[in-house]
Image 1: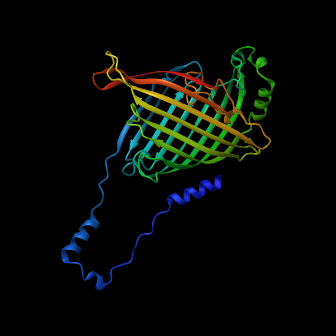
Image 2: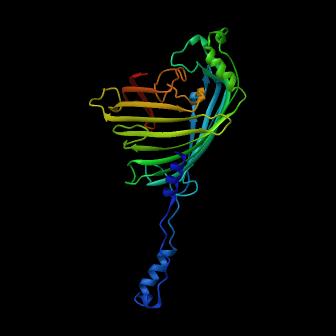
Image 3: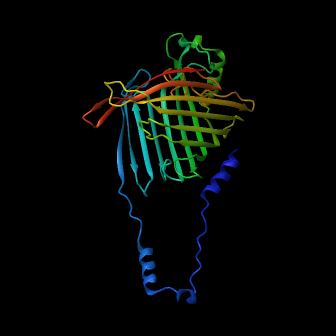
Length: 352
């Protein structure tokens, strides 16, 4: 799978070789003086570069959390940073028990360009990572807190063979690093209630860094009329990745994932709302298959969190496979001074 990803990447970055053959004197004689002057003038004209556009990012959701404590998140996004259409993004969170930093650079907007390249990297460190074991069935009283650090680096190419706003093929190569420093009880007696298989796995992972490389191919299709507040269209993303450990273990696994969300304008509008909003249906599935003799550590198992089952406590359920289906409505519920919009969402969701 890694070899196939690299081959696809090389094919995507190939460019046609320009014809550099010079005109012979006989050929140049057929050009008029005016045509020559126009050709020279056109060659000296450069495409004007748009000025950089800087937008601050504020993440107030990190103000307080019983797991992370008091803190805040902030960042910046810069369009046209080095060339027209590119994007530089940096975001960080600093709280009592959780710290993270992520940065990325994209040569173009995937929704407007036929090809682009993206690189990104980031890391997290936390002493209160909630852990309920690796079984889909959990015991709330057996919760542990993990003291861990993680790092990721990713490179991605995108190619829309049928033009912008169509299917985008994305070969991706990623490096992951995880280290469990220690674990503690969330409450007195939690350790005694935790399954012994999970405790043995944590003991084996403690102070033994785990890292590996994954390569794969994903497909993205986004036809929403607006990325922030869509009323129509759909967004579909699927991918297949192969992970191979680069540490002393012989771990490897394959993971497939697909998500689709379809939006449709609401057929009616309540009188006290600024707009009718939109109905949506969302489906998600992830399947993981293990290879080799080593069991899958907790950090490689999919979570039934906001990506799979919105509304459940993050990482409260874990398993190799997951699926969910949601039906709901979203829209603007308040408008302040014509410049600030407050969006609301209501939905029902099932998952397993």
